[in-house]
Length: 362
Ligand SMILES: *Cc1c(COP(=O)(O)O)cnc(C)c1O
Image (cartoon, rainbow, N blue to C red; front, side):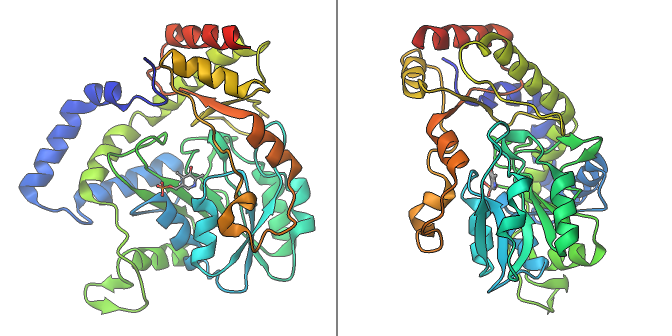
């Protein structure tokens, strides 16, 4: 039996360190914005090479707070991709702005910069690229378009923590980077968690207030904020795992490359465009025989999943704003894509048995 993600094996190797941190926290009872949250924010900022790392309660909140902090609101349009998790667009809707969907590149599934220009209107305020499945979007092209039209860029890094473009980490290139620590993400905690990264001092200050009831000084409230803090126990887990993130991502790449070597004549493996370093949050293939492959894997107790079966522009919730929107590449990919189990501990032997089953299904 091989699941999509296996967090149990990893916990066994981290158990002593995490349990010790938990016990210390239980003893000192500093549960909210305590020493581990502070230390994790410093360590994450160092690791990513960014001035500010502001943790919050989830990746969805990171997107929401970043958009709010950037001053995006009702009447504004934000250009993004339809081939992503709903949270990307939900956050745009939370602030009263409208998501405007642009098609993706057929090989990387990331937003196609060549199509952004045509989607820009006088209402456009920002571009929100997603580094999908762990592969950096074409940030050089996106930043150039943004500069030309005076737009902000907010990066959805929920799947890409640790991925870089020529040494510069995703989440440190645009105005803000939004990260998720959902358990199955490349850097996952044991519950919900999120973070915004930025080099902008004033945005960082606003974000620190927004996540904590609009307050800089206790019981002094300057703006309407939220209760959106990372809790101390999650920070313990994240500090333990951050030290190992580079090696975890390396193992994900090893697993992905083993898959691709074994599958390249059977299905369309993921394409690395060389723009950045792919950290394989998901290993996603394309095949006309998707259903047969998934059935065979299920029969053999091997996990698989479709990310994403219904693109956002075809979701009921966006029916009103997406009437007549057609994104042929996104629609084609969502019909043929499927993701296979991937995590740092997945062995080459396991991968070879998975690929043998896939070969027998097509
Ligand atoms: C996971 C994810 C989010 C949301 O993160 P949560 O921590 O689950 O709220 C946002 N965008 C993308 C692309 C994601 O994969």
